[in-house]
Structures are given as C-alpha cells and as structure tokens.
Length: 366
Image 1 (tube, rainbow, N blue to C red):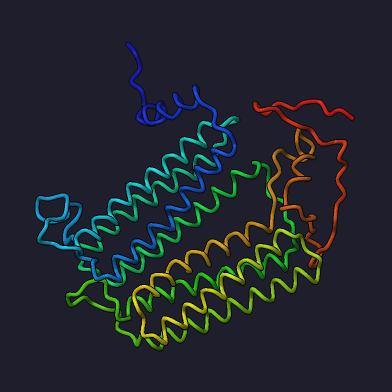
Image 2: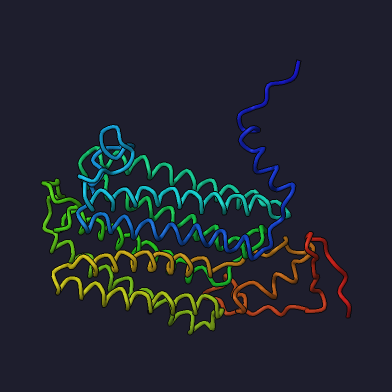
C-alpha cells in the first residue's frame, strides 16, 4: 500500500518542480524581492487613497462587495470602484510575493532563510486581508484601522529584510560598527516606530474618517496628537543627525554613513510635507503624499540598521569568505566592537576565491 503524502509535501511539490527545472540569475531574484517590497508600499498608499476619498465603505460587505455581488454595482458609484480596486491590488501584492517566493526557492544553492521570509510575507498579507475585511464589517472602527495600517508596515519590514538578504550570504552577521553605534541606531528605530504609531492615532482622530457616513473616531484632540507627532519627528531628526556625526567621528564605514544621510534627506522632505498639510488644513492629496513619505522613512530607517552589519557569502575560513570581505559593507571598512570602533582590517586579495554559476570555487590565477 502506497503511503499517503503529507499536505506539506503536496504544497511544496510545485515549487520543487519549478526549482528542479529553472535557476534564476541573481539579478532576477533581486528584482523579484524588490517587486514585493514595491507592492508592499503601493498597497499602503492605495489604502490611504481609499480612506482619503471617503471610500472605506464603498464596498460595505466582505468578502463580497455588496449583497451577493463580488464586484461593485453602478449604483455604488466611484467609491465602490475605488474600494474594489484596492481589494484587487491585494491580489497583485500576492502575485509579487509569490513571484519572490518562486525566485528564491529556485536559486542555487537553496537558501531556506530566504524562502521562509517569502512565506512570512505571504501570511502577513493574508492576515492583513482578513483584518481589512473585519475593518469593513465593523464600520471602519478606528482602532482596527490603526492595526491594519501598522501590520502593513510590518510587511514592509519583512520585504526590506528579504530584499537585503538576496545580496548577502548566510553566514552569521558580523558587525561593521561598535556596540554604542548599534545602540544609538536601535533608539532611532524605536523613535521612528513611535512616530509612525502616533501618526496612525492622528489619522484615527482627525477629519478623514474614511467614509462620508458617521464613523466612530478616536476620542482625543487630534491637533494635540498632531503636535506630539511633530515633536517625535524632530526627535527622529535629531537622532539621525547625531548618528551621522558619530559615524563621521569614528571614521565609520561608508555604507552606514550613506544610509544615514539618505534617511536625513527623506526626513527633511517628509517634514516639509507634514507642515504643508497641517497649515493647509489637511488636503487629501498632501495627506496621501505624507503617507507615502512615511513608508520611505520606515524603509530608510531599516536600511540604516541593516547597514550596521555584513553577512559573508561563506563562514570565515570557508570558500568565498575572503571574497565576501571585499564586497560586503558597501565598500566600507569593518569597524569592530571596541568602544565606538574604527578598526580597519586589511584583506589579502590573493586569497579571494571566485565561484562559478553553480557556486563551486574556481582557482585564482596569481
């Protein structure tokens, strides 16, 4: 009697079948994971458009749009079209995540960590879709809307990490900066998280309820919360400037310095947009641009944290380890853990091992 296959084996077999017949180029894997990241940002922006146009209940039921219909009817007007379009973009996001999963699963050698990150994205998308349906069924409860928004930012975390890891190896991470610098980066990330969370409260208490009907709002003075949001923004800016000066003072690697400078520029642009929307009484277009800026701030912050370490293509002493030391760290020197650290380690180029497309080492011609 033949054994009954497990459900996990059945689910894995299509991916294994593709992987056995196709090996994507590294650039293809990189682009696939980037597409998942881009769609993670797009779904946040289009979700904001639904809210800002008052289309949150354009499709008043879930999972169907209205009654027995899966699509909006003519009587529902433009609001139904906007809400339904955002729902359909969730499938585009799933397709982008699926493409990323197929690409990382098919690359050689197989990297289990990347595949798990891809599946983590998929299940976060599913969870947020369920939460979005619950948000509609509860009449746009502001608290579930806030959680819905924050979970989307959690998806961006995984997408950024997966995209970054495609350019790295699977060896244990090695710090490029000292512990105090990493601690300052952690404080910066925590302040950015608080900034985004308070921003969701501003939205939940502000004038853009998401629908023209009488929708429950968070019972706080939104202008006071907006002031707190602005204060936190200045805290994040101050921490970013401090981090940049520290990296300059210890002659830190060029990678972290560039990522920190990029974050500062994004914060300045976001700050300008924030003050414009406040003094112009929150016009919908500017608020939507501010939401897009919030995504960029979060991505830039994550890239700063990820620039603090490197993951070689192989464990120290193994094939390709010396090559990874030349290419890791965005061209910067590795900074040790002692104090703030400014220790540079020379690399013997003669020890660099090249690899062929299959990942096998090739001899180096001296």
